[in-house]
Image (cartoon, rainbow, N blue to C red; front, side, top):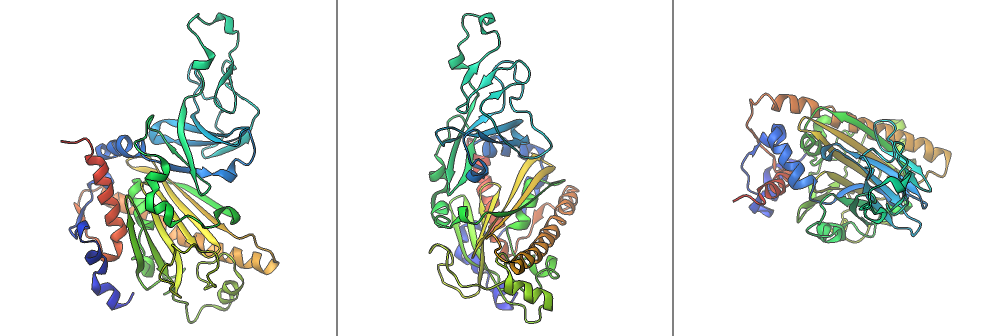
Length: 403
């Protein structure tokens, strides 16, 4: 990173209302603050939970476990094409209607959804259509009043969002605001060749999120994976309501190893390969920089969306407790069309996977050290402005309703 970039403190001057004081570490280690986050943030705002192409046909479903809310979300595409969300809880005795298998997301397809305990059955709109020996139910019982409990659900650009609040204060598109406009128009649905990773981390969800929300660490943590590749600092930062986004720019390595050079020339899914801009919407790289690599963004509270030429990828950190979270990483590229592209893509993904391992390797150690209480504050660099903004927004939500 150049001395000029480091010395300017340009983002502090651009966004002076964020201040430059050290940020308290307490939100990263406090169980009490975590409980407030669950109630005032995660149970109130719109959360990304999937893609519409995961539910391609009527009756297709996805189970999404949300530990912080002690629930599993059942997403179903109805015969009318609409995707709906429900708590996966039977209206009879509260058993799970679709039994999860394994520890992560489940997918399948059913004509109807029947609880294994007493065979109460629901259709693709969550309506109760059958109760075993219904005549034995009391006179007050009405099937029409005992469907699955709905969860507010909407889509944006093919991404599925839910809101656990019974009456959300704003709709999805209003919640996304300028951020939704900024990322609209990219052909997400055409870029579907997917690599997916996940792991459980013994750290607070914000410790994980913060590690991906800045590029100050690239020259150190990623010195082996991306030596000198992303060294121009953050560019075109935009703080858009509760959300934030920036451009990460690219310095082609002058002496890349022969195999890496060949793979980068062939790859359709590499972040370290300059290609002609053809599919980015005009809102991205609006300065038309020749060194633009990708957009790094954080959709509050816990979802990162990155967009590049022919690539989009995401990170999401789901809270499980104040001291544990689930990380999901998903990388989407154009389908390779030749054997050389397939080979080059595998090379690109090994590099990318290693970079993500380098990032996640820091998180548990950070949380363990912070949990000692020896440091009460974090001293943030100007290039960590997105991290600072995240704590600013979080504080706003936690203070809502306080005198």
